[in-house]
Image (cartoon, rainbow, N blue to C red; front, side, top):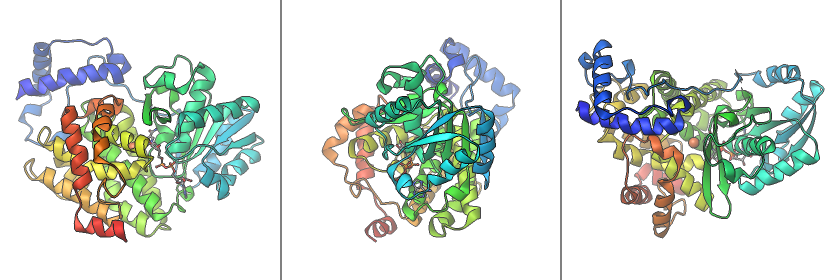
Length: 457
Ligand SMILES: NC(=O)c1ccc[n+]([C@@H]2O[C@H](COP(=O)([O-])OP(=O)(O)OC[C@H]3O[C@@H](n4cnc5c(N)ncnc54)[C@H](O)[C@@H]3O)[C@@H](O)[C@H]2O)c1
Ligand SMILES: [Fe+2]
């Protein structure tokens, strides 16, 4: 058993070397890993802790050099956060903002909230409304052109993950040069980005506070994962009063995205006690409030708690990274231009079924956070997976990939690209290409009656 854990440790260290900068130089042998694990676990009393008591120890042996945590310089959360952001932005002594948003937020007039906030503080601004859902390399290039033409010295992103990611792309290329494609991978930039204030309106991707930037390469139809501590926004703003008008389907999709972040971060081979705490509390809040936020959108408590939940899930995955749900969802999103949260929601139970045989203990704390009580590692995986399916059905997420328009003949190329996506490197059970294809197929074929009904309603 220890040998199995240690070999996972060795694999995790390879991943950590890519995702945790301080661990890049760490290289130890398997026997050292076993000895270190045994000693530290015994010292901590972990070996006498009953199976499943995951919350009181590392899930994975710590990398040499420790873990790295990434956060914006300042995060403002709660009703009124946008107003507070105004005085903070003023103190940064910046002159002219490029507000990056999407066409919907510009057309509805919602963007006025940010324009007014800046104007009240004497800051000039121009609006770039070209961040499309699943933003592309072309959107980044267009935003950069407008930034230069207008001599803007900072960026405010306003909207959901698409606006923030497009803004991160513009901000990194503005100071580092080249094209956004040059930054695909981990920590590829060399210079700080332009100051970036991210005002979030969905709950959500947590992109307003993460070091992840997901941009579609329009010629390859692949979502590029840019994981770079430099793209972390300077200031994150999560004001739930900006989220109240989200329609039902958007609330559901973005809420399931946040749940996926929390579950994948908790499962990750580089999770640690800080990310575990964030992930479990996010799961608890989402289980308690997502249904209300979807079906009673004006309920401010549900909106407020979902805003915290998605931020907590962001804190978890920003440092622990994700797994195959995201690596596979990125392919579906890039290839078919589908909503990110819906892809995650459909894939989440299937990939967790795949993970259950490798890390059944990890489902115990998730079950408790979902309000399912204290279960054994034999009972917990099936109950958690059933509860995820039930929540998806209750918030009316379509049942399967067939309903989303995916085509089985594309699964081969989608699986090939999944294995290249940085988000999959930390999945607790490595998969072969055939296993990924099999998971796409299961997600295509699955469908409980309640979800089918919801999808056709
Ligand atoms: N960088 C990260 O850390 C990260 C993490 C997860 C997902 N993502 C990316 O984020 C993108 C998805 O972002 P998203 O799910 O937040 O949606 P989105 O930004 O694509 O927005 C979807 C739609 O919702 C509308 N909208 C946004 N806020 C609204 C509000 N308050 N009221 C009414 N309508 C509103 C927009 O106008 C848009 O039409 C994907 O491209 C995904 O890959 C990034
Ligand atoms: Fe996501």
